[in-house]
Structure formats: C-alpha cells, structure tokens
Amino acid sequence: MTLLEIESVSRFGGLLEDLFLQGASLGIVFIKAVIILFVGRLVISLANKLVRRLLDKRDIEASVKSFVSSMVNVVLIILLIVSIIGALGIETTSFAALLASAGVAVGMALSGNLSNFAGGLIILLFKPFRVNDYISAQGTEGTVTEIQIFHTILCTADNKRVYIPNGSLSSGVVTNYNVEKRRVEWVFSVDYGADYEKVKAITQEVVGKDSRIQSNPAPFIALHALADSSVNVVVRVWVKASDYWNVYFDINQAIYETYNAEGINFPFPQLTVHHENH
Image (tube, helix red, strand yellow):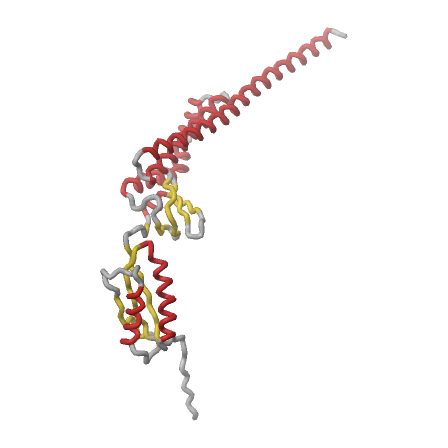
C-alpha cells in the first residue's frame, strides 16, 4: 500500500470517528431533551393536581379556580419549552433575542390572546357570570363549566362543548339566566266569536292549578291582539328559574286539553274569496 493510500485511509478513519463522536453527542442531547419532555409533562400533571387540591381546600369561587388552574398550566408549559430548548443546546438568550427582534410580529400575533387574557380578568373582577351559570352569548346558550385564561367553556343543552374567547364575552352582550325567578309568557289564539270572558276564566283556572306559578306578582291575562284569523290572548306568570321550561311545556299541554274539552277552538289561517257573477 502506498503512502498516499495510507494517508487517505487515515483521513477517512478520522472522519468516521468525528462523525461518530458528533452523532453520539447529538444523540445524548436528543435523549436528554426527550427525558426532560416526559419528566416535565409528569411534573406539570402533578403540579396541576396539587394546585387544584390547594384551591379546593380554599373557599374560592369555581370561576377563579378554573382561571388560576389554566394560567398555572400555561406558565408551566412555557417553562418546559424553554427547558427543552436549552437542553438542545440553543442559547435561551439568543432565543429571547430572536423573539425580541420579531417583537412587532409576535405582538400582532398575540394581540388577540392578550385581549382574551384581559377579558378573563374583567370577567373574574366584575362577575357578569360564574361557573355553573346558564348564559347566552355570541349566538350560543349553555352552562358555564370553566373560565380559562383565554376562553370560557360552555356546555350546551345537547352536550356540546363550546369555547368562546374571553375578549368577546367581556365586551359583548351576555344574557345570564341564573336569576331567582323568571317570567313565562304565552300567546294563545282562539276563534273570532269565542266568549273572551269564558276564555279568560278557563285560562285563569288552568294557571291557578299549577302550584309552581307564583301569586306575587299575580298572573296576568289580557286580550293581546285581534289578528287576521284569530283573537290572541296573552298570559304572563312568574316562576322559579329552575321551573321555567317545565311550567312552559306543562301549561301548553293543559291549555290545549282544556280548550278542546270546553269547546274553545284553535283557529288556523284562512282566506275568504268572494266571487261575483257578471
């Protein structure tokens, strides 16, 4: 073997050794990052459970508990990401400098989340609603299950989970149905020619039989309108908020059965045509 061949083999061997050492070093760094990832996720899970237990032991509103738990979780995840970046050999100071250099773009990207975070604080401060309240907002109705740092979670009547940004909730219209009592209203239609006093008396009797309907304020019954094909009678009563829908549906059924039994007819749209012979 010539001297040139020996030198070539020696250089190739040195190159392989360098590649092996670098690969081993990268492998160790990667394994370290993976270990930090799994250990960090375990620590975050344990920390979240600990925070929830501590909050449960305190006499704190459920809204505040869910908000604090969500904020702690986000902070821990950010710390985990920074730790993984450091384990990969990326200087965290350089990483921070990179973010700072792109501050305008990052600020624009996070502006929505910052407004949602501020909205969450406003909700906790002024309490337009709380956890377990039934609300209507942004075209959605449901029970508030969590108030997180960026979103509020509603559970709808058909068991859907809806995430609404806190920013829109704090600045938009929110209807809170979590009140002590609510007014139920019906408009019943009867035929023209029906005895209104009889209709009113029968309606008053049906309403008076339901013990869930409150006497103060007293039920209100009046002739609402003379419509095209019917005489409309309005009925307004007050009930506990929890009885609202049950009373609404039960009175509908009772009125239908009682009107039919008493010979009071429900009208339907009709058109009278007069034909003249020329």
